[in-house]
Image (cartoon, rainbow, N blue to C red; front, side):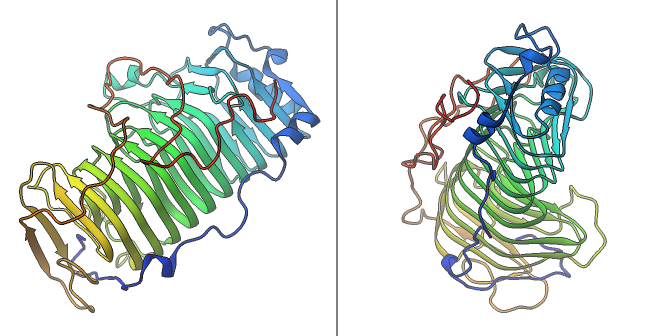
Length: 438
């Protein structure tokens, strides 16, 4: 817990079950997929699209969305579609975007390929679990630049995103911005081994993320401000940057967030909470059942993050954070591992070398944390022998190296059906059985 010397992190010794974050109500669309299909199907092929990977599908998507303004499904059938015109789908309710084909980026215009905003009762999905967006981000990354993002939802309520593949974005892949009552699941995200290529970033309330696999080298599934009642579970960060809260700035309100059943392989960290100055709070959050192998860090709480410009304020106050059932290894014993320890936490190094715990101006229980509250301090504790119980199961799909930046990344043939050892996805993949357009 690296903190500015003038700040304190007060950690209450509660069991994870005592402050277990919960969704505040139902999530997902209000209208079933089958009901939308019965009402109206607006096939983009009837509005000028052609699955020839040459004709720009953007205008056809916009026209089909307008045609379904009273509700229904905008359908992009199986096939390959070039996309050179970005679309903003705004307003209305009771609509779905069903992507069974693959969209291929054909423009260098900035912004987002698809924006959905100010709408409710919305669904973006693939009825075959084969729908994909191919961003060809490598064409930017070759020259150390970034381009458009793939998908953004802003102020959308009662929604779902599922059964999709988001591949090789020139920048971020999925942004959920101030949305509510949503469910995001059964996704795969793959991009090159570089920072600035976030998997998912979310802000809002009452949102459930589950069964998502991410390969990148930046944010895997990350919480932004403001956020409340967000549940994140069954997540596979496979050669990634890892998960985070932040970066946090002035006026931060984050509470009742739960991460559960999280697997992290060859990533920067298993979890990070990052800020520099600012104010507001992060409170009543639980981080439980984490497995990590060969990561640089486990838990890093850093309120003096030098990579971020100092924000006005006396610091973001953190309270009632619980950590339970963390297992695994870090890759380099020379890097301090920073932990909050409440219950059943055991880590060791890949090499068998001694391991360090670093605590700065943080209070709570376990390892180098000081009890109570007080002023600034720094303690480094070295552990020279492996703790019992640090080993846990591994995923068969752990990558041997990160994905490259110099060539196109293939769209996966299928989305994996499990994201944590021994657990299957909470919801079955559609694979043609979802009740959408056919």
